[in-house]
Length: 444
Image (cartoon, rainbow, N blue to C red):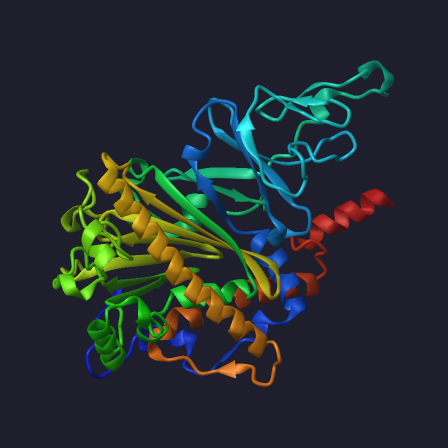
């Protein structure tokens, strides 16, 4: 269950004693060897969110995704074959050329096709991944096309979100997402197809940005200039605290007040927000659809059913955030590490399509306001990375509100520790040693 507003005595952290209260070691955010272990132990074994089904709504629609987080050069194709969403590694079975790309092989692309054709020697593959054509097939030696289809990647869809997993032995997606997913089903995601997106390279470890978005301890200080003077002074004086926290296995959530849309006092917000009826919390005018009022929300959202509720943020390990706002829109974040001190941050905002110009401008203001807040966070993170990278100090104290930071770093460490234990037991690829023994015997 979620734990709600704490009494004067007690704390959030006491509900999860396994997390402890000691300072947290941040070596995991600066050690290059640890980062390489995270690639293998985490990003090659967990479910990774790729986007929504609206990206590829029709037969033949496809997108490619580059996944350096799972290893240098890893690239996949995600395609709608007319019956289901599939995913494949993005390389040709002939000589390993990248199969789908345009001018620059490192860039992600999208489009529509009837089949995939390699631009090197014109081998062709169906949307289901079957090899259908070999140029000058008669010159090959006993090649059976059935043996040379595209290498598939596990791909499943939950509530319109596309996930892939590079581990063929991983548990099914729905099982992995667990109780939080069950409690979020039924939200009108499919109604919110107006889409804004941001993508930026951040010079900081991927976990540091998740840290920033799972605590509100920083908000009254770092974002003070975004509020009107009187409101900013109140926040700085009294602080900001969440309504509820919850942890279920590898995943976590925080629920908070803050749905100031419209604000109680119009003078609390800036003139442009007054004119367009919008701001960080989203458009003030709720969309007229079912399933977004407080009493209609799925049970995991605003679990305490607080009247002052404003936003919930769900952290699906390792790198997918699903964030709901009271006015009736939602955000997703993804953090894709490319090095121990760099990652790609992706943010996607989803609204109900506007019916007029005012509604459109209202949504655009929300998107721009979000971007300003995100830049403030990102800039601070890069300063953090430069200093913890010196390793002058490695252990840092965390306050009671920073409980989800403890959980994130502990969870990531557990994945790495399990992987290291498997390697120590003689499994070269992180699977079972018996499998490796069989392969070695076959080579002999």
